[in-house]
Length: 467
Image 1: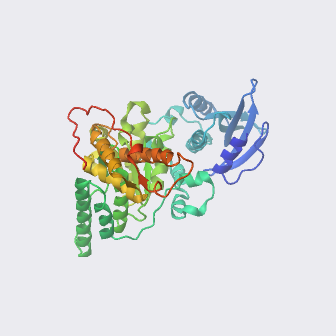
Image 2: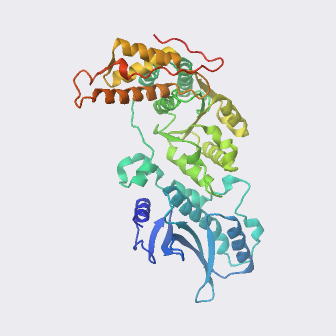
Image 3: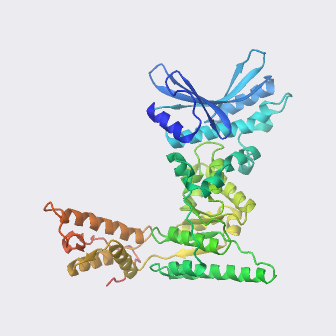
């Protein structure tokens, strides 16, 4: 019960009543007044039920039919009917969750589902006349129409305030939802300088510089009173993991802000799980909310090809449609960068006709060469003021040269993991006598460097040489 109390308290700011077995509590969420109740089933299992009053109305045949159809199709919200004293009926939307197994994600999805279905069905269930329930299916063919104007206003409410005032809410749940806004007034020259200092990525640097030149050319034409040559700012990054895609996305956000394309220049990082929900009607809401968080900045979606994968049971296309509509309706207010393996990203772009028209710039991130991997390892050493003995460096060189290359190769991430492993081994070595001497604080010896793995490179893999 303490965990449930903490979970609800972190999510809402106006909790009233005690969260205990047999008691009721109240709170507001997305402009709806919720009633919660914890009760015990016959087997001792604790369940919490959340409900919202939909309306009080005369229960005509068409309304009862609609409620029956909704309750037969919706997995996450149930509509209940109770007769009131004046002969009319009170309709509530509710859902129950196991107290023992509840998680923050389940709680949010449950409340969001109730709010969404109440907004959808309240106008229909409140009508005084008969209607055709067949026209009120909760499973609509066009996902973009699922989010009503009222629901859209609820989703967007206070998002901009949260982005501008990151420290305004002290609850951990609110902090977790707010994107990190990096305040920078750096010029394009300074940001491009930071880009050029990155190890490797020469083709990427060239493409980014071309993007900057194109935008500066357009700005110059506009300043001269000439028509702008509009180009899509949205990008596709392809490449193996650890090739710097996220780092470059952040620099692109800074560049777009410096060029006047974006207002804030923050980056909201996400994967498919942040856009796709497990229940009907939730994916458009979830995707819309993420887009609102990224408004004024960059939405970076890693492994975006997962939106077209079969495991998402058809909800991926809903996320894509919602994303495309938001991009179209909010031009100049958001930039979307999608990333993933080259082959899979081509399939992703082919999955929806609107994707290729909006993502016409594809930047490929090549694997790091062996020499570049060695430079990355040296950067870690320099950052933490560590040095290698001559023998230790020879073993590091042997390890880097032995790394096989192929699909899924970790690149810079592999070097970071290798560095962390070396540091852990060195820590054990340095504390072997119970005390750490001054030399051991900075000098790594060959004893702690792991031997190169005896791995045969994949066919066609190129090792290169790190000296």
